[in-house]
Length: 193
Image (cartoon, rainbow, N blue to C red; front, side, top):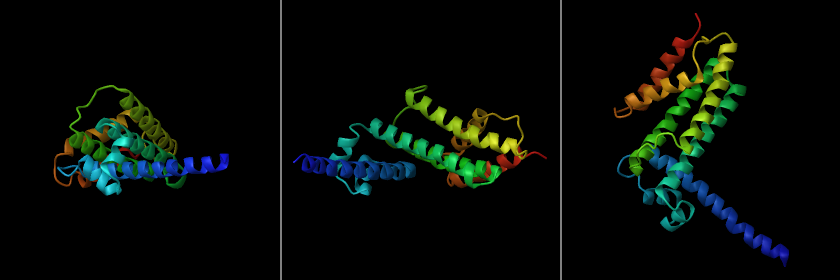
């Protein structure tokens, strides 16, 4: 009887985990696209669940925003570790910076969709800053040690340049393509001569 109870208790939990993951994927896509269609209803519809299921997992817009943003930060951070093993140092750095453009698009889309003001330094900000700085340091140090990238830039400066490019261009049509091109120019400028 105990085994039967465990099995019945486990199944909804696994369904619940799948629903949560589908909601996070859908929210990242919907918020990343931004615009007037970036509603919680659109997220639930894209995930193939009812709005009630969304609210069971994420009782507020802010809770959904934080969960999506944390997930995106974690994915970009994990990407740095993979790229450090799979790609040449400068290529790894460039590809990681490119991936961050989508993270910025998702965050900006969420801020617009949820009408959230930037909170300034918060636990979420501290978490993302620490994860992204650590990831940037891994790739930057590797590229510097290879002798291919100049050594007078810090991970914080690298991230500041990236954020500056993104936020300066964000309101313009085709901004992501422009920022990707600017990142390539920026990385080329960091190369040792």
